Length: 86
Image 1: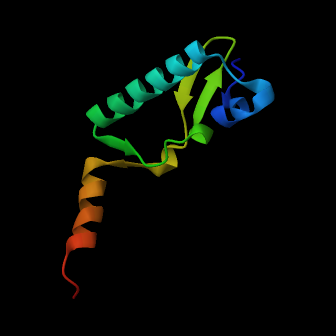
Image 2: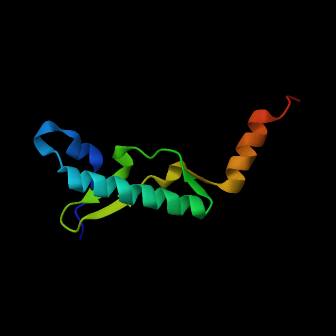
């Protein structure tokens, strides 16, 4: 089983990741967000606390899908924001 930790764990001075690992994690996270966008899904809370990393397997995962919306849900939100009041 993977031991996944969110990136806030690695933001402390006594537990920093090396720059190559950081670049790799950020790159793969961006690829994951780009893939989600291609599927018409937007994650509205992509922050270090929602990016999980397992140093043993070098695995990266984006979590907290409760903050995601599909394109049609976003269109409904925008319509509600920009529509005239009743």
